[in-house]
Image (cartoon, rainbow over all chains, first blue to last red; front, side, top):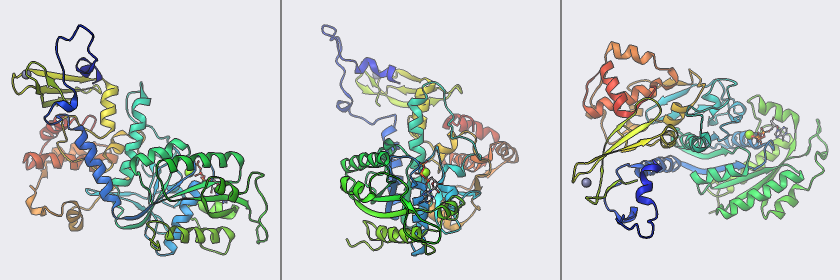
Length: 316
Length: 162
Ligand SMILES: Nc1ncnc2c1ncn2[C@@H]1O[C@H](COP(=O)(O)OP(=O)(O)OP(=O)(O)O)[C@@H](O)[C@H]1O
Ligand SMILES: [Mg+2]
Ligand SMILES: [Zn+2]
């Protein structure tokens, strides 16, 4: 494609001013390739679908393995327990785990002309994940020419993420939670699609490294104009079986200090609780159910989200 | 992207698109003033980039299907990931096209041979492919889908590998 436009677009050489070619904007008449219109209608479709969503809540970190997916799953369940209608998008196309955590595996998706009906987990959370689309154990791979993969692969994945939001029959939702994969670039990619999420939860653990990554993500999000962000401190101590004080897990900084130095509010502190983690990984996240410290933390987090921008108890 | 016929100073009109089947695309443009034709040839990478975006050069013939890009591009898809919606569900018809009464749309039937051929399409994309052909037939006012109509649609819509 580029080859055909170089002649017209190339800067004219001194002395070789044989013909004058006008620029794109100077030439009136429709764009016959119709590319812009098509992108425009895709964006419109996404907007229309999200118009029925009360709040888009992004769960991110920048850092891997800190519990983003576990937080997403348990928050979703805790919100449903409060009577909210909740959908969840597993934006981690390459390393999906949210579908499993929400108990969606094995669900078949109804294919309707107006969209794909999302899977519904035992807790009532609706969700979509690449895990529901590819064969068990198969890595995510795309059909296409092997050479120059870097040119088109990112685009393909961005389009899938868009389809996960715009082509799913979410219906009316109070919350659409988005589980963002690790990597600070991934947060930016999501913001290219949905520039103004209502709330962003930055998940971190009390380690030096994780905290510095989260600070960087926070800066990036602020620069992108995201207004409402909160820190979720995960694994903030070990919850002993049978209760009692939390035992420290990491020797890193206090989560509250991390939040403060990033200029953010601390929305929740979730202890490391092996039983809670196991249930989550088995597709039965307890959310706010039970009297564990983790359950109490998710109850409080759900309440905080409900009171945040776009939430059902928002003060605005 | 616009193509300008320099001698006439006219924007050329999109005329046709062709997919030879080797992962490349050819788009033809014509100058309305002098009748000159021009072909834009894209290599496989360029073609993939455009198709990755869910875009058809020259404009869409039939609307994009849900998950169309994801479904067309995924390797090792789960064969039974999708169940087809029950046909004739009024709530679905209303949701899809509230303005257009179902009766206003041309009813399209499938010949046995066409149906046979459809069963060779992987289940993962079958529902989508079926709707693409149906939309095409409706668009062209063709009441009966035969293998021949399917061939024509494939060429017209650039449905490689479907
Ligand atoms: N507070 C917790 N208590 C016990 N186990 C937890 C807790 N938080 C997370 N886990 C467990 O730790 C593991 C990693 O968590 P999770 O997959 O949610 O992290 P992630 O940030 O989404 O990872 P990735 O970056 O790979 O997407 C999971 O098995 C999860 O159940
Ligand atoms: Mg994860
Ligand atoms: Zn001309």
